[in-house]
Figure (cartoon, rainbow, N blue to C red):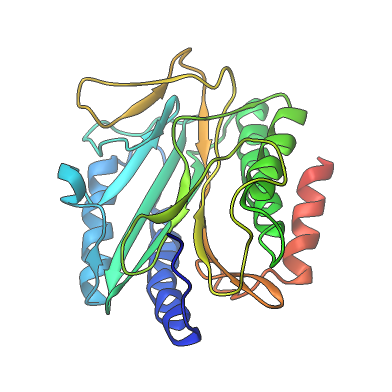
Length: 268
């Protein structure tokens, strides 16, 4: 069952997501060759504590860390480690918090120093696909319109969409209905309504879409060991369209300026 949120609840979810956005923004500035992801995990916990917020992932179904730190071929749920990040790698950071009864959840992928043109393209296409999906989150559309827009953009660029992991509803629980695949035919699923709040999160591979889970039972990697990127925003559907609650730059809505950025990205 998809739970519709009141404006008051959406504001609380937005506040939680702004904490996530601020923390991811600070972590992004720390990512340089030589730093290790266990240090980034510690920093994320310290920053959350300053906000009196609880990291959402630590202990969730047994996950042992606060930050999901996925390097290169790691798709999602990567364990932070003491291994220093190397120049030319890409790092996906997925982070969430619980604050005042509601969850926030967002993810970014960033370059570690200078990276290849192929890696830049992968990250650019993945982020653009996220905004393509968000652009379909309007009242009257169907859930799979979001999924189809993401898949179409990714595959037209020559990459593949991970099918094992999906986006989700979010609110008082970290994962709520509905599940939101990043692929599929348009015009299917629940009809979108104001008050729905979703975490939309395309995971995109440079090679095939198949993934496998490592022996730690959490870290998912591309089966062909190609690079993978991951971007995520929590959004609310309103009568006027989607509102991004977790924008790293603190912008509360999918404004015309945001869409112009997406259009520029698509043209590359």
